[in-house]
Image (cartoon, rainbow, N blue to C red; front, side, top):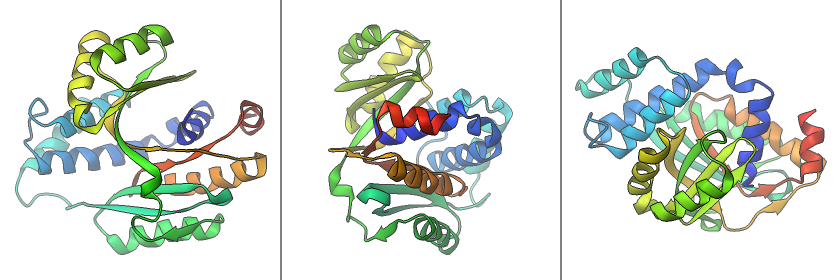
Length: 249
């Protein structure tokens, strides 16, 4: 299982996602706003906007909130102008991290990200310092209740996906970035709306962490997750089930 998926699943089971609902909605609204402004405001003609709206539905965001965000973004000069920024660096144990943010204040975001890295044993690097250790891919997420592992794998391969990572909380379908919209649409016709369909950074290799390293890294990931500006963090680590059980208790 990809390292950050492990962290995400632990946080979900601990109820952190419910506790941070307002932060999740803030991030989703920002993504909807940027997606609507960088393409047509029609989700059928704008794959990024369609994916953002699907993620909002999966998070149970009220439809009125989604509609207002799209309308506001489509009105010239209305609302905040968000900038997409990527940070790269190293966490505890030499783990590589890519932090993607949407911000209306570059200085604030840089300060928050730098503070998180400094406080929890990480170091920010230059752009490109770790990205070469990841592949840019498309990722589609479905819940575990949608299909069993074999059925999802078969459907994903038929749709043109390259791989499927199934875990107790769901399925992550991996495809070439240029095939994301087509694969997502094929799976949607069969299983309904996914939880998310987006571009992602997939590590080429993962770094195993012991309990101490995993705990330190998870604190860094939590700190980054606390920033409203941070949209997504990708990391190349893995943790054994035994250690995960201790951290999850």
